[in-house]
Image (cartoon, rainbow, N blue to C red; front, side, top):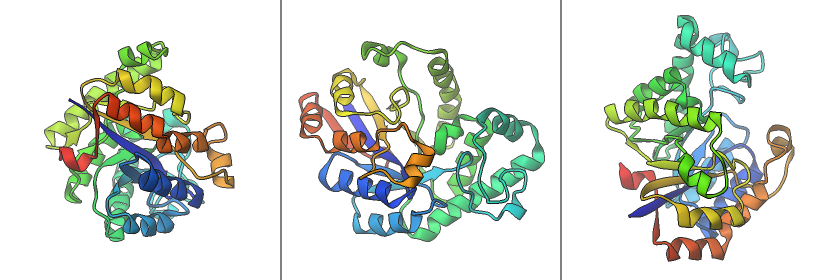
Length: 280
């Protein structure tokens, strides 16, 4: 049996993103979204989510390239004076793994983000991380252990099958194979904690460019089991999107989520839409 969780990242990043996610759920195939609790439009995102009780929402943990919840004075080794995580993935990864003081601050920030999510009153459907930083063994371990205390029952494992993408014309890169290897550790961490996980994910190789044509090529190739297909939709461009993701086709991704051809392809291939709640 083939099932698909159709999700959107960066809920709360801007009102244009929030509007795109709302439209993709109301009029398209979107089943879930991941909320950045410290993002500029998080309050607007929560308000929209409460108007859409069928939309399943999870935590989009931010520990890189984005705003923290705790004040900089409490996590000085994690963020700058504005409370922003840096974008240097390698330096952050080394710091998170090797420095106990940094790990203590990281744990405090992750706990604060789960607490901020709980304060919204939304049901916690799942968790994942911005830039897939939960593939880092320290971040993944903390996400699982702290998340359990807040009722977390499901985690996205960003494992994109290289053989499926090869059939879609995307050759396997060294990075893709490395992510597949790291994802195995995260899968084991989650399963040991009794959490549900997806079998595959799609959106890595084509991140920011999950267009209608690409979806129509991918859908017949979807493997058996549960695939999460994630997107970055938005109703239009805005300064936040232009600053952080100038090359992403947010509007093209929204069009794919709204496409009747995509919906028809899912039905034709016998792919049932679901969410993490159904797995947990």
